[in-house]
Image (cartoon, rainbow, N blue to C red; front, side, top):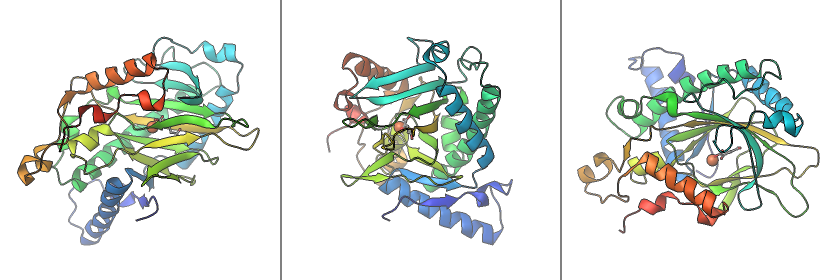
Length: 320
Ligand SMILES: O=C(O)CCC(=O)C(=O)O
Ligand SMILES: [Fe+2]
């Protein structure tokens, strides 16, 4: 596999029964799971089509997001809840990359985060959030099957969607000397969805080569995060990725990112299915998710957000 694959999720959506006995459907699902399994092991990235989120809604959300980011700073800053992560914020260091964003999580509610204008921004954002939540549940179920975990295992481990978050991001064009949009990183959560516009710039690292994740209308990008890498004892890869800002002057890039999260009190460690049961050593010691996210945040703030300073999952790695 040398390209990030795209899979059609309709065989998992167009049928309500999880346990169908339609042979043709089961064969289609099996094939899709094989592709996803390989993509998660090799890249930690894949793309999905026919995922249940209408393309028109994706386009509309990106358009409204663009209108919002084009507002003058004083308008946008009204949505700031600094020092909290929710609301409007900017990342503006050559180390961490340059982008501005609006972050929402159901824990904090939509009130006071979304501006009244552009009209419909809040409603459309709520609508895409709820679609992405549903798609997340489908993808979670598929990953559960790909990893051969007991039925519903991941869902029972992680049932609370209040810990998910969604970000609208804008990346302005690169300058002559600087094009870092978002530094090389791995996501800490379970998995992430990215809806990108047609500008491009997201890249994934594989075998020391940065591979562009090319825009494709209607597609949603899925990337595996640290939690699944740890649970699966490195079967699945938490992909290293970054965003390079557009080179064309006047052209900004917009994306919507949905983090399928995890409650802070959850204990994260390699599952017995990938260790004891198969006689393999755990590659990580266990930790509370909130401790890991707090360490990441602290380090980001202390060290001026250089990619190499951020605490990564290797912090919990055990020697071979
Ligand atoms: O904007 C993107 O395409 C990706 C953003 C990302 O990787 C993140 O927010 O963690
Ligand atoms: Fe990311």
